[in-house]
Length: 124
Image (cartoon, rainbow, N blue to C red; front, side, top):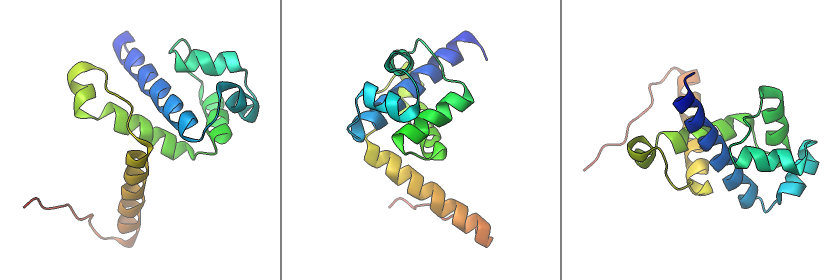
């Protein structure tokens, strides 16, 4: 992964982490205690100074009481926004958008398991 891609991913992880942590009303210290990490480490991830390894990322998700897939979905929503594509930065998505995206992903998975093709919305 080249340096620019790594920076963009780090930014998306940081923004998603901050958004979810604030949504659940947790301080960095509370999240650190729940995750078994230090407050300093959480701060460094949020400031894009560290990129968590997979096992650490799972600890963070558990500390947030968030499914790993939902966290990844938050990163995807952030990185696929038109503003991000144009400028490399966009404001964090509201958690309601993450909930909506998660529900769409669940519905698509259920349709795929049932053998049906997902329906697309038709614009009027």
